[in-house]
Length: 287
Image (cartoon, rainbow, N blue to C red):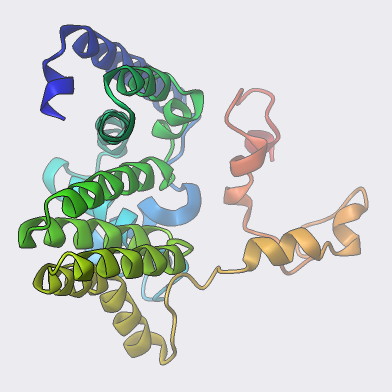
């Protein structure tokens, strides 16, 4: 990682990638294209800061969204005040870190030339830039995941308790950001523990497992206490599959009116698919 940062050419690439991201997020935010309420993460963060509660609607606990990203936004608000633009600027930094971690992992596996190519591609990959401008979890998740994979490689190369602690924390953060990662993380963790056991590093494996379980375990415990049932990730699990496979007849007809179909999302979610390009003509704004 240090070698990458010391290369003057790569420093110029990083600066260009940062300026591109800052310019883009500034445009979509100040033009009103990017809205903080997207997918409710920022709304939950506001409730955490203002009331100390994990709610969307005040006084109504939720487990619809995994906790890591709302807590990340809440931490920014505690430092900078409730400034949504600060979250997007943080996304720009996370985006650069993602590119660096990917490049560092590539360098470890394939050498310097491949690392430079990986850095150049990821810095200017359109969707990495696009998601930086919106209040979705993807930018945060990509950063945490790329960091986790890099630190896991370091752990296997040089097994130490502090590296096991960092790797376990990052892998746990992945599960607390995106619940679909829970089974993947469990499989990866089982493989890592097996490798450490073969290297006669049982203590390091124990540290890794203990820390990995903290974040998802705390979320499961909270949900059990609040809702009285086992919720390992999000209560929206399977929702997209259901809405994609089961299409009510009313939705297929022209002239559908609000209230006719109970499974539709609220109108403030329309901009997820029908907005974000021109408020003068886009359906989400006009609706």
